Amino acid sequence: MVRVRFQQELQNLQLEMLKMGSMVEKALAGAVHSLKSQDLAKAQTVLKKDDEIDALEARLEEACFQLIMLQQPVAGDLRTIGATLKTLTDLERLGDYANNIAEVTLRIGSRPLIKPLVDIPKMADMALAMVRQALDAFVARDVDAARDVCHADDEIDQVYSHLFDELEALVSSGIESERVNQAIHLLFVARYLERVGDHATNIAERVIYMVTGERVPHQLKEASN
Image (cartoon, rainbow, N blue to C red):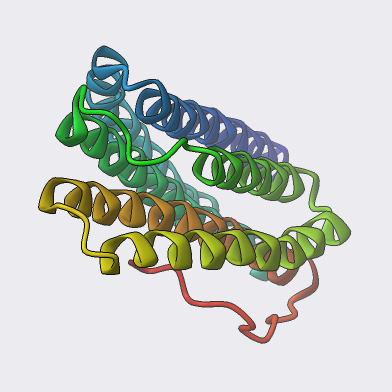
């Protein structure tokens, strides 16, 4: 009976983690949309939602500790709870990136964009797809899907590299200071989205460890920033 209760609570915890993931995805998509459309009201909405994400993370983190203290999980369950705790941290960080992008929208304001935003929304779509697949793989314990997420990180890195070179060239071309500042802001946005892909890959690697006990060699950057 105790074991059945533990499994039910663990399942509920993971469903709540998916809810947090959905909130983070919505925040990131909204932040990128606010930048592309220069929708300052949308950017403010993203910023206001951050407290809800933080509060949910704190509640789920506490639920993880309660499971450890009260239910005496076995080794495999401990791996799952540990992976959940780290994934919650990743998701909270993604919420911070959404805030950062929304803040860039507010800094640029209504001033004309220095270039049409094509690669940034493309990176956002790729990164969000990775996050979604990583979380689905976590709940389904799908190792193959998790490995696919790890491989997808190379694609987003390629788009980031191309955009970095393009914006760096603009900064170096002697354009006026206001346009330089905007180019630098957009570089930061591209970096945030590249890091989203890194965090998604971290989640996917934890799925592999959680299910198999295999620690995937770190082919990618540790997403701790």
